[in-house]
Image (cartoon, rainbow, N blue to C red; front, top):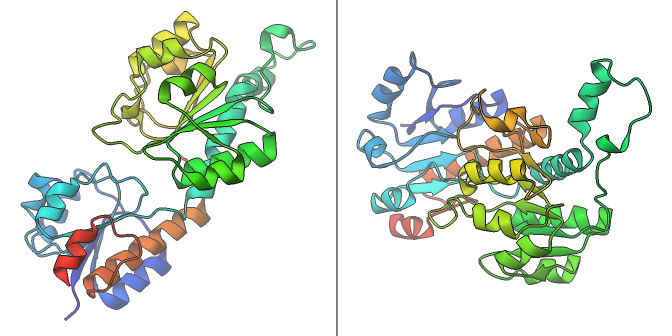
Length: 327
């Protein structure tokens, strides 16, 4: 008898077919107020779930007594209560690495767009306001040869560093939980304290995972330490930044500009000050949003799910100790 699983996110038909070959599948293209009651009814005897964004905590798990694996279609897993999942001997997996280059492309594009004021100038042209030579009041700033500070040197941070070093001749500073000797050697990156990055970097990219230690990691003190010419880019999670402090820093001229792909509240409120500031470029959390990359993520998540239910080691296991105990 095939194990019962719930897929609660729209995935490519090839991915769904693979899961169906190995499992009894209950499929929801999305969860909303209409589908949630059915979802929780099916959850009562489900052995696995596959999707993203759903908060899997103690309250959720109380409704899933047969659950054996949670397969997250995301590199981040701040939606998963890993200690609680682990306590219940449930396997947790994610989808790292396959999205590194796509997210790095997005973050570097956001950095360039912010530095060169591309969205603002695009709107000027399209609205018919380009009537003469562009004056100094609309000039951007150079990116090449400027110092880039990366906070969080994991796979995505390393891919950003590669683009900066080989493509833009940028000196690279980085801060991480531990030193990354590979990026130091390959990209001549220099390990620094958080304060040193804030003081010295021209561009600062925040790429840390969201944990209890990184909530509002960047706040008023950090913005005060930055150069007035600094550009701040957040590609991690919205909660890693004190957004009120960032608004004040931008309004007061403590920093020059910001590029944001993530927000504390998503979708961002239409009344948020960021949306009315010319020196802020905003994206709707689309770092990995290409068809090719989302397909790779879904395939990896499906492989994690199926192998985990078969008692085999999933490629992207978060809580290794559970698999050892299950074995």
